[in-house]
Length: 153
Image 1 (tube, rainbow, N blue to C red):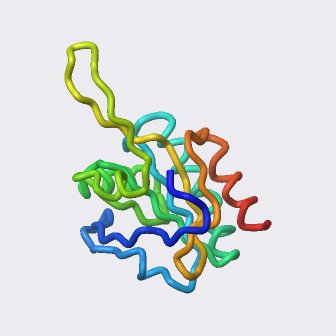
Image 2 (image 1 turned 30 degrees about the vertical axis):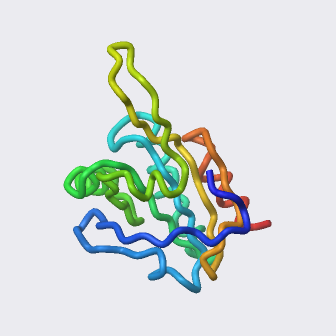
Image 3 (image 1 turned 135 degrees about the vertical axis):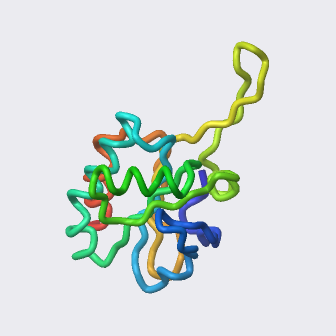
């Protein structure tokens, strides 16, 4: 995980519509940047739907929500459409941003193969692009309300 008080690493990633989004596009707004393992899984769906339900409250507080996973643009589009998600999903198939934000674990499978997986994590980034909160190993169902509360601090 990156340290609170540091500049959030810039990135350029395609969203669920194939439009390339940069972190700098959101300067002047608070950004809830959350990393999750996989579209359409129970925990990730619960987390995304909760962020979706609370999204108007995030917007009222001047924040946007960006979800990042290693899934493809097409997978993100299906996820967005199936659950009516009102926020941006970013595709990091190369896992470069996931790595830059320190939310990847590298391990070895029982068969001896190298495995890389995403730790469910969330950053709150201020209007100037500085990390003001960082949470690793978050609980999918609690994370959206936790981040909304952080915006009220």
